[in-house]
Length: 248
Length: 260
Image 1 (cartoon, rainbow over the protein chains, first blue to last red):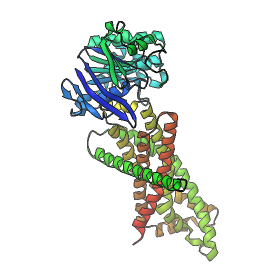
Image 2 (image 1 turned 30 degrees about the horizontal axis):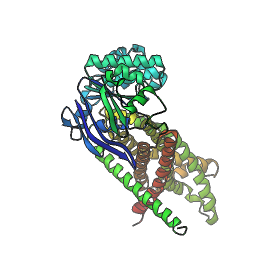
Image 3 (image 1 turned 60 degrees about the vertical axis):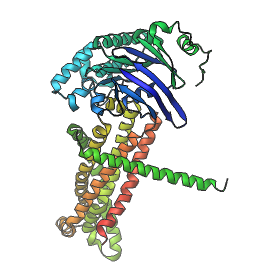
Image 4 (image 1 turned 120 degrees about the vertical axis):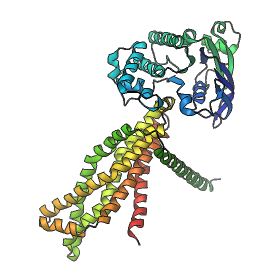
């Protein structure tokens, strides 16, 4: 379970997070929605320790992440980055097996490669992709490789940062489905940030809307459409008229 | 207001400069700490030795060859004013080994390597690859910076040694083919006047310059701004700061080594 309490983070005069409270139950999939620049990525990066929050607490299974042993803590996480963030200096299989080739989870290269090929197959890629370099792949394939890398070490928690951005609607649908399947299959806790409403409906158990530095609305995905919060309504319908300023 | 504006600008840039020096010093201290504590990545180190050392050989070699040749011509022309043309072999050797080998080698490597490192790490930062490394339980300082700095510090003295030899050979070629020196005498003069310390001091300079080059490349890459513009600026800053620091360090080291 991830518990975030009164999290604050500013960059200069820009107060991005102004007291975020959010609880994500183990084994559930929470999607955080919100406009561009509302701090969704900053929130994920705070949890991972990539950005240091100004104040507030983040706990994973009751343990304060600021005090946790870094390696053991990070070993519980997998993350799919927006642009894939694949290491372009190494072939696909080494990207997927990165964690298995070094550090505490290190194992022989042949075994790591087998696991990588298996994970690639799981995300719908054939073994011949394993020896290609990331630059040789299409955007959709890069996303799949990123997904395979995120799940390679069987993490307890997986973060997805805008998983469908830059993909065509069909490919976006395929990736959404894949994420849902994998999260259910692994029993992992998932946190996704997106502004793609089709992703929300495909991936989420619960939805949280981040606006003005706080969680504006939070609830089960089934209640999202009937909720009467004007901010949420405007976001779901994609209307230019409403309380959220169109120019930000 | 108008009168104080230049002073304010001066103050701002001084503060910015001091802040940068502080940040680089902290970065260097962290780097040294990570160098001494595991995990280490020997495979990465080997790759960097190849990238930084081996692949810089042609650049350093050609620079040394032409510099040695030009130096021989200059010293011959200058020496002839007071009938001292015979000093060409020894001055070429001493000049190359003490100063020109390490400094020009360092500057050429700064252009090639600091730029490449800053561009690579800067692009990795902009495309979130550095964040990805962290989430994969790998410290970017240990995985990216330590191998590069170590490789540059270890290989630059070797590059300098090779450059010294080629530079002296350049002088020899010009001396024997254009200036009428007897080949045997030229080599004899070179060997007689060159002392071990001349060469060793140059190699120590090389190691320091190597450290500076990779440190500046990594530091500016890691602190790169967003987008293509940010990476471009980081690359320029890496080359400029590495070059200036090499020249400054060269002055300090020369003072330390050769003034009693």
